[in-house]
Image (cartoon, rainbow, N blue to C red; front, side, top):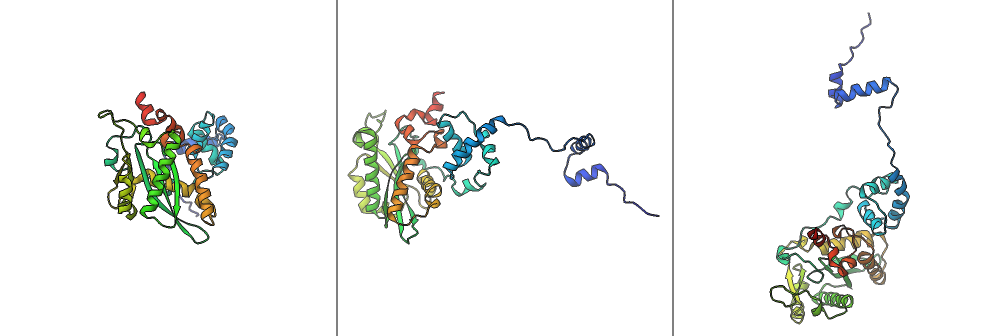
Length: 310
């Protein structure tokens, strides 16, 4: 006599498989009717239409994720949403890796003491620091740069083999010259007025506690510039200079690390090229898709002010 193994009860099978019983019985019914158990794919005419356009943007800007591509397309006049761009890029395997933002994560918030009153215009808070880069020719260079906290505008790079007080001073001088070029007036005349005193406020220049910023040379320079108020972050707290660190990360991961930078000349050229992209072309999610130069010229475009108006 041949014994057959008893069929496993449906409830027990669903428990082991992790499938709700109603789902399992519905699948069985569909299978008996000759219908596919797997749903979809559903029509997606919007994604179909956007796919080749989004792929072109992703090819032009391979370091950007789908949200940045979404803002770029909107800035160029395309009526699109991030939820449509994501599946369009997924179809062509053009999405950034899952841990991409983890690599370039936004550092912690800036020091509270520097932002007791949140900036509402350019030239209120700036952040200065150095970042190291090694060229393929063997040279190790330090880029010093000043970024405007409110608009994210990059004011220029000072590149040197050292990171001394003199190098920090040159970076600040570059930033002052760039601000005066943009504003068409001396820096002191560009600063917003304090509503309580009527006098022009000083720019809060935030740095870390590196030797270049703690030395006598840098202190003497700051003393000659009444427009500047130097504020150092807490010790061992680089995240408090967050906008500066984030912008350096964008420079490296979106541009420099994607090239073979052979020497100082190429480094200076490519860094300046990216500064133009960063300020004039690249949409910034923190600025609601606007470019830094747009917010610099019209601060009301900043989401902090536009949300207040509504």
